[in-house]
Length: 65
Image: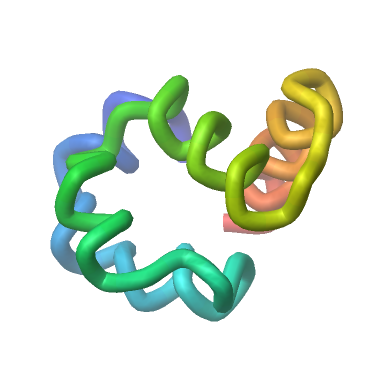
């Protein structure tokens, strides 16, 4: 699955995102609206991770989809 597919199916995939990153709130997910950079930013905020680490986690998650 590529990121365009994630964006297009964001409403259906929010649950899977929240399973992976449980500290993200529904409000966070609504604001992200499938935007990868915003997702990485929220992961950084909530988990105190560096940008490259957040990006790597997103890549790993995407590869498992």
